[in-house]
Length: 181
Image (cartoon, rainbow, N blue to C red; front, side):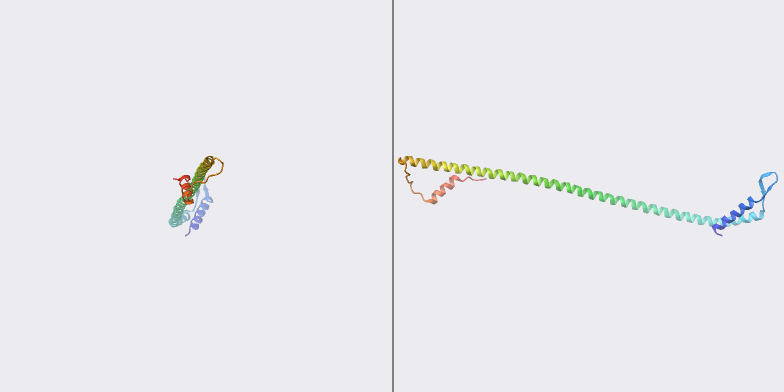
């Protein structure tokens, strides 16, 4: 018998009891056919163990399915959390790299600006020294010219002893150039 048969048998038993004749002076008592009621109960008993085992098997299968679904859901949750954590770490690494890159660029630009300033100061200093050296050379030449004029007395230039040009250039180079360190 199937599970539906058990329900039918219970419905038949219920109808039998509800339609039975009442006992005089016994409000809650009735008369039913004993044999027929016992046969229905015996059939229900025979069917119940099979139905109960089927119900237990279905409940066990359902519980196993639910358990597997919970395990799968937990594994999926853990995997998702790990992926999210990894993505956050990667984003943090990228953010830190960008910050470090910006710091390095800023530092390089600052060093470059400082080097340009130092180079400009150095060139300015060399130019000033060259101007001073040229000014001193010009003053020396003008002083020599004045003394030559005064020795002559007539205001005419007296020629100086002839010194080869190479020696004059050599003298000028040695005296007028500044050594750089």
